[in-house]
Length: 204
Length: 159
Image 1 (cartoon, helix red, strand yellow):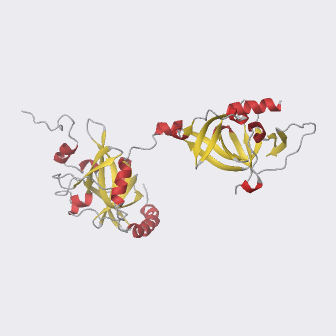
Image 2 (cartoon, helix red, strand yellow):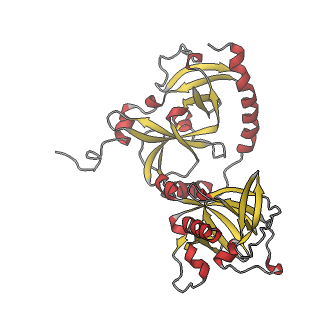
Image 3 (tube, each protein chain N blue to C red):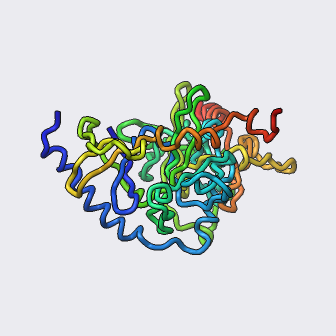
């Protein structure tokens, strides 16, 4: 049982906004509007719910010159780069040191060393900011690496995936399972579990 | 209960929002020559043909104004025995929804002689809202033409 006042109050602002929007929306339809929308509505649905479900989300980031993608499920945190504490008596190129991420001490690795990606020269650096990305899953140890730029999450459809060219012979390609066509770049999608396994072996 | 408001002529009407599948822009329709009054044609909704009923044409004889706020309301049309069919309604000022209790709506007192789709009315600050009862929008003969089962719609004349 609503009091009469309660009925009017929610309507009053709505009436005001609809009057304002109504003024804007009272414009006549542009030429070709109806025909263009008719074509759009008539087209088959572009992505069905099943396709949405099968689409995998990936995190797209840049290491040196190369854009790479990691399954979004493996990424636990993206944060500001911070000072890493070097580890004495560890002179390998993979381990860069220990970083403190909200109280948790994580090994920071140089992912580019494992993948063999080319370092960008100064002239080629993008406008993005470096980010510390923490990856890991339930079974494997979490590790951090520094990306030169993080684009963000991307939902990649099956149609955007390209098989790897047969001639790719770089060491890093053993972790790349497909290429994603993204904004004109061929982005290598990394095989997350294989990469984490390799990192785990490298750290042991 | 949520209602979608729209306008026919100068007056405001509401539809039960639960019956609304989608609100579309005013798309061009394929004309249906010889269709009953108010039927503006057919639109293709992702390949599915949906009859378009122009509410302004039905009620006032004038088609909806070709302005941005005129839109097409895609309604799930209850169809006895065959699940739900879709019906497209072209109306003006389809730009807002309103939350009202069904008990706010009271009979108009002039039901006799009015079209069957016009339901009870509710008052608000701007005047009266009239509830349009979607199932009664199409008279039986129009419904028989539009949603005729496929076997009788094949065009064959039976002896």
